[in-house]
Length: 302
Ligand code: NDP
Image (cartoon, rainbow, N blue to C red; front, side, top):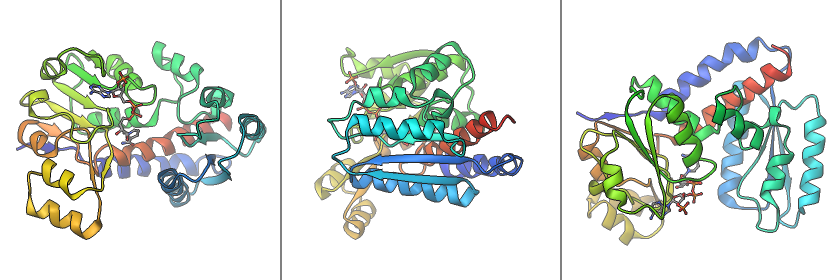
């Protein structure tokens, strides 16, 4: 029987462990979340982060600026937050509007307050194994593996996707945990053959149900980072092969989430796998809270 890797259980475990650390701090940790523009998905993410902060007793400051905000204006906000002693951690919600220089913005956050782990200093720290904020989603995957009793050392791991926020740091974390790691991307020749070698397969692509039976080695551990929103009934019918229950769920809600891994193929072939939703997603927010508490401990000298 395949093991379903339950992200909600691990999230609750991580959040529970943070509580005594928060209580031991001289001052409640402060997280500033900066949102530019009115992207509805980003607004939902920011609100979830703010709500989770409140439930843990963290102080959050939501800074919302219009789409027309310039790079210079955003840099000025970050300067203020960097200097603000009541703020331990800063997050700029991505994606930023196209006219803003996102790289410059990420580099303007004080590396000690960079809870996303995207600042080049923290990327470097990750690369050479020094302590520092690790990107939340891949770090959450490592927690899920560890807390679900899945051995990584010595395993052949394949990461599909090479983004700076998921694929590359995921590969680096698996490497530090002593896996033998291959990174695949859109120019990989014979992706299925590469994936078939994977004892641990991570999909971080952004394409609905893209990794199918031909990519999944029987018995593999499969981690699906993808979150894709389906709004067409025909897509749901094709992916779930006309499964009446899935179609009824779609008809009720008018949308459906699917990962980058085919949900039926993975459940038939993997030894352990993450569902979408409920797998990797809940870990991202848990690791954001964990990074915030760590930043506060450093900043407040604990
Ligand atoms: P990006 O679009 O930045 O990167 C996608 C990667 O997939 C690229 O490296 C790209 O290759 C690769 N890719 C695209 N098409 C193919 C293909 N046909 N074959 C092989 N590789 C391919 O996405 P992100 O890394 O930001 O996100 C990936 C997924 O994870 C998305 O679904 C996103 O929604 C989800 N996500 C989920 C989070 C969570 O909390 N669970 C958090 C963050 C992201 P190339 O570099 O060659 O273009």
